[in-house]
Length: 94
Length: 94
Length: 94
Length: 94
Image: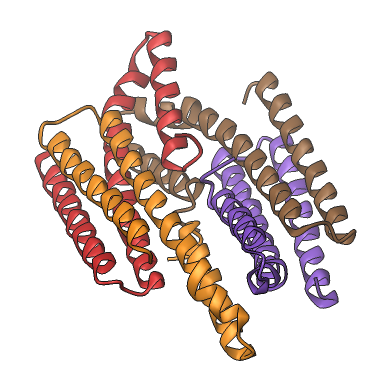
């Protein structure tokens, strides 16, 4: 991952961490359930955004490299792995 | 929220926070993208689990109370709010 | 379900059915993968919209009735069932 | 798309179409909401399965070809398009 992308990704994750700290405080302070759920959705969204950055990087580097190779078994394996990651990203597999 | 549920929820959130700290370290250490994405999915799953606990509590308390009231406008408003929360939980709205 | 809601829901489902027919034709005619995937997302979205209508109706009738009852076991069972339905709606369970 | 994959995909879509017909009948016959929602989830799952087949095919053909090209702008465009499709598949964009 390029230095610039990595810095941005780490900033996003730091923000998500801060959001979880805020979430714990809300629960401790007995905030209204719907506000807690809104915050849960915000953190999950932030993490999905971070996941998209990593996924894009993965496609542009590892997957691109495998797809350029002549080793058909290695290509298939990489595509299997990508599909598995996408399915988990979409909440279709655990 | 009852003391016992609240303690369990806070423990789940503390775990999710720990998972994000681990995630940042993985990114800093240039871990393999797919492992990073697996960890992102794990934290998102943990947060969704926490959200389910809050949502259940919300239904059993606030929604139950509103549905028992004779104030039809207040009932409708609570059901609107619940549907909105469920839609966001399902990633159908932001 | 009230007659009006039912008519609207049936209209939505008829539309989703038409979209699947269009989808099959696209696949038969070797349409571009991304256009096929866009159409798949459209049908899934239409079905999720139909599901929201049914879920809302369920909360306003069956769940409301159970939450007004004095039978605590029946209430718990209904809330369990609702949470299960919401989790499946959110793609969290099969 | 290869003839064999295409036949399987069309069979899946025909099945999803049959499931929607069954769904409409359930609504017409005033089936229990939770059973209707279970059927909605089944059709959505079937469509997501069909979407995964198309997405895999897309990666193995169009994306693979673009990633092997020397035209960096064309590569970027294809990756943008893929990420957009994945985000929609994951319900992250409309």
